[in-house]
Length: 258
Image 1 (cartoon, rainbow, N blue to C red):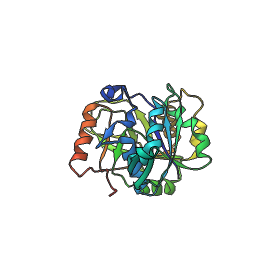
Image 2 (cartoon, rainbow, N blue to C red; image 1 turned 30 degrees about the vertical axis):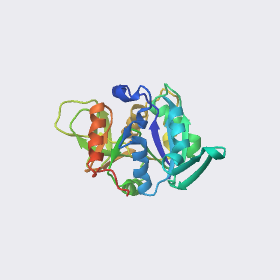
Image 3 (cartoon, one colour; image 1 turned 60 degrees about the horizontal axis):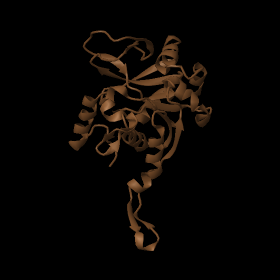
Image 4 (cartoon, helix red, strand yellow; image 1 turned 90 degrees about the vertical axis):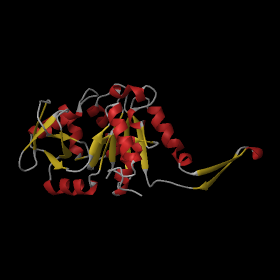
């Protein structure tokens, strides 16, 4: 099952970092948050990635092109015509496609543009700016069990984001704007989607959350996988620094891998 990562936005609320690099390339512990997300999926056995790039997409492509050198011990012998020797090889078991989905394309439009790389198969999708300690295999199993068109992971959080209304059967009933409440379920990403969701996307101006997820909810085709553990997005410098502190502690909740 392929994993689609939304990595094309400009991240204007994190402008301290994103003036020169895309938001998913902002580093936590010396590695882009995009890498952390991919390591999460890889730990659970999902290694085929389609990255929806846009803003400064060439930086993402170059990072992957050079990744082998970044993570290996490399010798440069300038006396012999710049001979390069790899002394310690390290390679992830990843297959990665980085797609330029446009600078101004909205979230649904970006997903629509990568349909040819997905084909007629279910796929996973998440945002390139948040980490989580959820068991991804459990999400996939839950999705297969209920048989609806889409599953998204929800977490309870103090209300600063748009919230979801969920019934007792874990079916998402509607989306609504934020209002003052102590804690509400929010969309944490980490979705499993049937290929028919592409039928809801008709242009680059499609907003996935409004034009696709809201319609699926209204049709009773969107289910919630409720996660009670750790989840954190990286919208602001404060949130980036919070994630950095987690990593520096040596006990980052999302780090399942060795």
